[in-house]
Length: 210
Image (cartoon, rainbow, N blue to C red; front, side, top):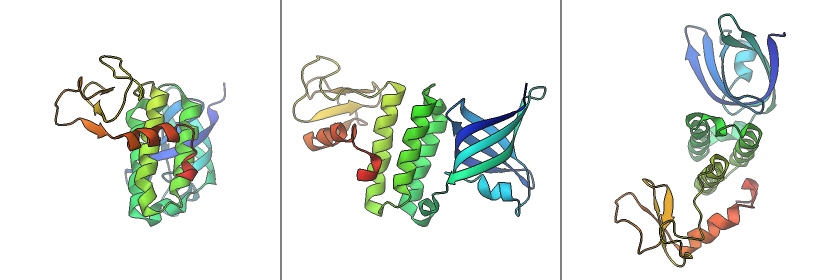
């Protein structure tokens, strides 16, 4: 069995490991999250290619005895240099990457998760400062759908009455409630009708159109 495996991958995080190596975390369409070592000094071609938010075809050498992985090559197809040119873009892109890492890469829906992340990062690459926050919310809303935890905007989670007017989201219960059923907790989020309409609209809207 070959120890060299290729993936369609997106680099989510890259950190220094030792004096000259790096540890990289990728979201792949084939196996979800993968962590691998990048060997080479500052002038290494591979080191410059394996950079956060780069996307392309990744080759990994897997040693089954040590259960270790190292990056053999990375043919970058999407570089996205614009993300680092604006603070708001960087913060929104970082939120995307960390959310994916902390939620285990989408819970098995890897091709869909990678597609969504790539679309949002492409949009952020040239986004205005004002659009970056909207794109972050766009990603989080769609990501909740991938994980199966996206709240229903149409009905109250308690009384199941049709939602009209202001509704409240409870982070503790991870659900939406009408004014009557909502607990008076400090962390609840108020959603006015305009926000509800916007969330419904972005369910079928491409990230680039925000």
